[in-house]
Image (tube, rainbow, N blue to C red; front, side, top):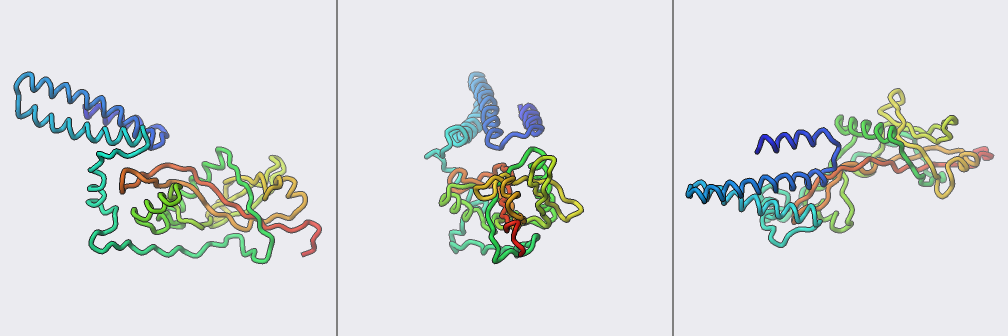
Length: 276
């Protein structure tokens, strides 16, 4: 049976399946395994193998309880009132504040923002709408992953521990991203590509390694093409958003979920007829 479950687990790893769906599949498979154990336990009792039957019975009770908790959480999107296991595990694994001191670890200070495109204080700056095709999204994913691996970007939940992550999620009802807020890429620029009629965003470790990571569709409420005809446009700020995140799990635990990276872009502009 365990060989069969291991084969299923290995097979699922070949597919890009969201953790929530994968956990639902695991619950279904484990339920089938639990049913098999119930049959074996019944046969042991029928054959009067008492000691072994009692051991199997205890295993069935524990597994059934665990499956019940997971089924309620993953299929009904709520926690069970009978969940007495999660709070105890939270205390054992240290995901809750210390009962002795009640104190939480201090947050790590964020590094200064990398102003890769210069400073635009005193200029008109407006937020732009960024869209991505499949190639741009993949380029951004690979770029951010490599920068995090080399510690050029911080993915430390803004220095929060599990208890703080839970508190923020419950207050905002929004996933708490692993990537620290307010981080920019080492290099980025805005390029007009006439062939595709796009204002393309290029980014990378440096200018030599730049790749397409998105394109501007609107600047404020104005279409990007119309804005480019009327104004000189400059990519003033580019912040990374999204990515892997945590949400609240059962009681005082969290669950890591997948998410795509995004970009918040701010453009500086001035009239094309302006001399300054």
